[in-house]
Amino acid sequence: MVSKDLETALSFVIHRMSSEAQRSGDPLDEEETYLLGHFPTERTHPVVHGDPEPNPVLRDFAFERLCGLAKNARLHDVRMGPEAADQWEFAAAVLQLNHHPMSWLLGWAWVKARRPRWDGPLLVGTAFVIVALFVFGAIGLSSIIEGKTETWRRILLIAGGCTYGLS
Image (cartoon, rainbow, N blue to C red; front, side, top):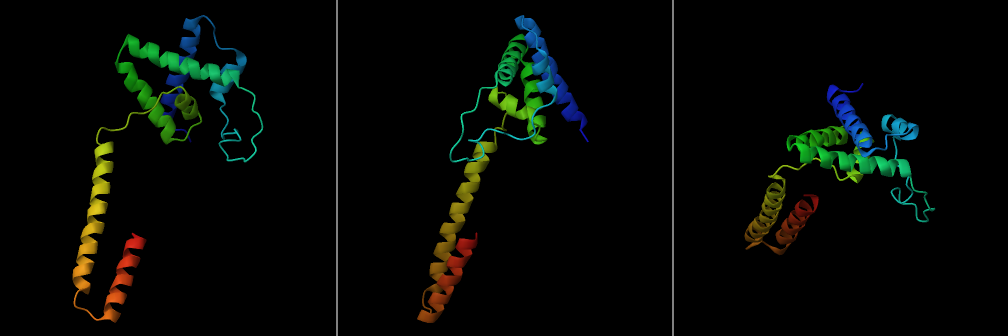
């Protein structure tokens, strides 16, 4: 079942690309129109799948043209009104969230969903907390094993090492 947001995103992108093709004076042909409605569900490029000896792959001019149309349509829309950037980002986010093949086309056309501002600082903060936990854990473990017998030291060091290794 296709969600309403996915239908909205697909119809927006297809409509804008068709309009851009009309505006450029070279409307979509039958193959391009069919491709817009029936994207392949799997990537078929051998390099993507890690084939050690990829065969030469012929260029897909229809797909390349659709990528160019998507890029030009977005640029034209953003020049006409800045609110269009939000519509394109919404469409890209919905298509990516639903793993729709149209998101590949938008990715190649450099139309991507914007990451939140707090994404980078959150990543750095999480890394800092993890490093601090390891440092304080090592300090705490060294203070615990101080004054213990050699057997207890080894047991505690092995337990501490396993804890670090598992986390």
